[in-house]
Image (cartoon, rainbow, N blue to C red; front, side, top):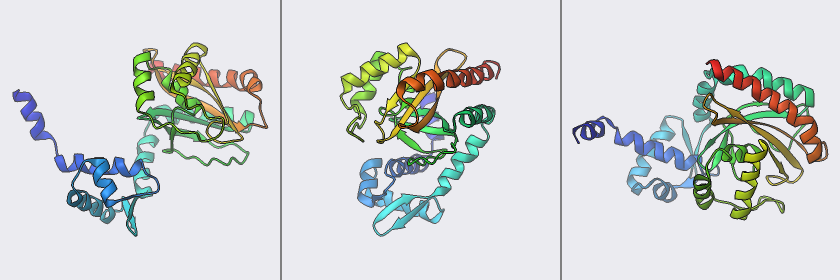
Length: 258
């Protein structure tokens, strides 16, 4: 009991509340009104207002009319963290080689909440309609890297994830049935890779493989995204999958000794 009391005294409540406000804004790229921020973060309107105005004053948020939005200053913090990550500094040249050989983008992501977060990306020579940078978030359920990362969950964990995830049809091809998604993730677990065919955006196809840490658990995923007219699903398995698996193997070799 004494340890718990001491731990409570060491926590800064206002910082925790400020982080909840940041998380609420991060989940709403188009911004939130004061009332919405208060509801999402579990704060009073007065408390949320003080924290929002502090974020605006410090340059981490901006106000447009009645909407509050995060600014790119937060992304600079993320980039500083990622820039200091030895793993992705090592992995980027490997991903660049994959990208150069195919002329397509190669990316890496980790799972955070319902989303994947891009931690490394090498843009391809071809122009893609989806423009993504390090720090970008996409739903896990309808992306190849997301399904690879979800395949590391056990059945109970996956069921809980799918139950609470906000699932919607991005295209007519998006799988939205939770039982069907569970079966797809189980197949990814068995096969060791995932292909997502125009479920995020029409005309966009991607393939991903896991990157495993020393314990064998999946710590990240890497993928190649391409226009659907460029590679069929069969061609992705034949041409791209071996390159991705070789790249993942090199990254795993690095993780084994670091």
